[in-house]
Image 1 (tube, helix red, strand yellow):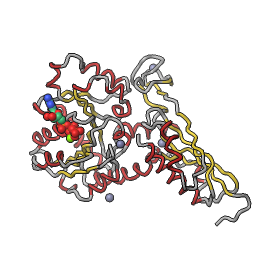
Image 2 (image 1 turned 90 degrees about the vertical axis):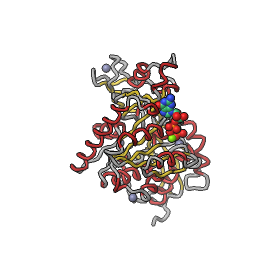
Image 3 (image 1 turned 180 degrees about the horizontal axis):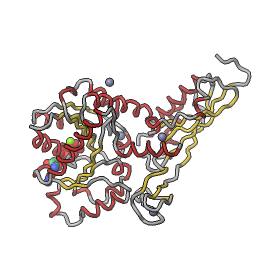
Image 4 (image 1 turned 180 degrees about the vertical axis):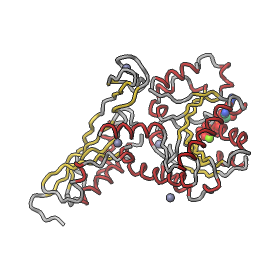
Amino acid sequence: MCDTCGCNITPGNREFAYKPVNGTTAVAVLKSLLARNDDQAIHNRQHFDRQRLLTINLMSSPGSGKTALLEATIDALRNEYRIGVIEGDLETENDAKRIRAKGVPAHQITTGSACHLDAHMVHEALHQFPLAELDILFIENVGNLVCPASFDLGQHRNVVLLSVTEGDDKPAKYPVMFRAADLLLLSKSDLLPLLDDFSPARAEANLRNLASTVPVMQLAARKALGLQPWLDWLRSELAWQRARVDRGETVQPRLQADGAQLHEAAR
Amino acid sequence: MHELSLCQSLIDQVQQLALTHGAQSVGLVTLKIGPLSGVEPALMQHAYPFASAGTLAAESTLVIELAPLQVRCESCGAETEAEPSRLVCAACGGCHTQLVSGDEMLLMSVELITAEGSNHV
Ligand SMILES: Nc1nc2c(ncn2[C@@H]2O[C@H](COP(=O)(O)OP(=O)(O)OP(=O)(O)O)[C@@H](O)[C@H]2O)c(=O)[nH]1
Ligand SMILES: [Mg+2]
Ligand SMILES: [Zn+2]
Ligand SMILES: [Zn+2]
Ligand SMILES: [Zn+2]
Ligand SMILES: [Zn+2]
């Protein structure tokens, strides 16, 4: 958070640096508790930008259809882009195997007991991955609506899936996660006719209550329904990413960038 | 969210600071935590003694300042209090707002203690 915007370097803490103290002295620090992760994430983003690739972090509860979305996306974009996937799961290589079956490079991170990916785990995976041969890298985070939102991995965009069987109140119940989304996908939309209590409009209203203005799309990856807007979103994000890299700029997910700007303004 | 491991990395930062300044121990360690940070203050307090045991911060006290949840409205300009699941403007009801405060998890300051008159390296 604050290590990326530079507001942690204040006249207050600069003057204390490397000065021995006498008696009791309070030293101002102003550092995020996740400073180490955030530094690593900046480094990861440099790896991605150097290769001109777009990196997307996919987050949702377990079983919302992240891997199914990736399978459908690979099928649809096979002749257009070179795609790679980093999979995060507590256990098993299942998801990476599903992706490799599509003929696409996949690296499985098994986190053991950690219920989220962090920037260090992703960095380790990067150095065993053919980044130079890719246009889009997807990182499928561990299925979990809580902590993955707090760990910047170096991605350019966050995509959050909410499957229609989970209930339309989830944005209100997990504001930290849904606020982090640059795009919300209402997945498994083919099941909507079977459910009498999921209202896409209510799900969107709950997201708007979090002051989020990001696009909301419905799709059913398993039935290849409603994929076009999602594929177009990816195409334009990749075009923007390449244009940015050519200008020597980079981008963080909306939320972190917003926060950094606010801190800048507050100085 | 992982309050014990957050406490451990907090203690790493504090310990490093104490060593850098040649301090012998640590007094108050002050954090600022917002309701949208994902960090649970009570769990931090609970985990802190376990993380600090055996370090220069073993005798220290963790102080957690709660950051208010506040938004600034892009439509009417008001700055108002909000709820985690409703970040709308309390003045006009608009939902185009920006968070002014509430997502921070910051180490604000550390009180370092060195015996008066002792030699510093
Ligand atoms: N009806 C329907 N089922 C789907 C759709 N997409 C995924 N599913 C089913 O949902 C289940 C979970 O899908 P996955 O793609 O494995 O979900 P995931 O989010 O990758 O799961 P984790 O990685 O374990 O968190 C599977 O049984 C899928 O067949 C869809 O569009 N429609
Ligand atoms: Mg999966
Ligand atoms: Zn800042
Ligand atoms: Zn976790
Ligand atoms: Zn590296
Ligand atoms: Zn207003």
